[in-house]
Amino acid sequence: MQVELARQHWEEGLRRLCVARGGGIPETMLEQVEAVTDELRRRVGGRFTLAELARVYDGADAWAPEAIAERCPRPGWARSAAAAADAAFHLYARGARDYGS
Image (tube, one colour):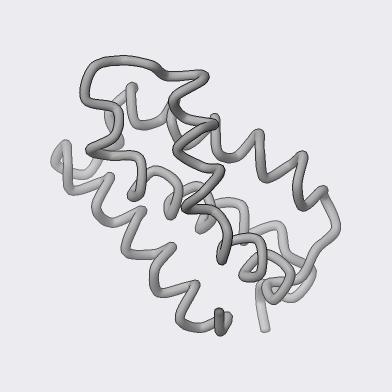
């Protein structure tokens, strides 16, 4: 996936989570974001580029819901899983070597 398109998805995910509670991310959704972030640390590590992160994002629809379900198995978790995953990518992207580019 192209980096710019991926970044648009990530930003939209964060926006959707923030809108869910009038500007703040609900605690249950924060737990989902944390679950995906932990998996990103394992899959991507600490030194990465936005292009590398976008490549991992291409397959996230397969593993991100599993990571969320494992750590946050509350009723209704699936409704916000996609937005939580996108938000996690958005926040994680800030650590990319080329984030400011």
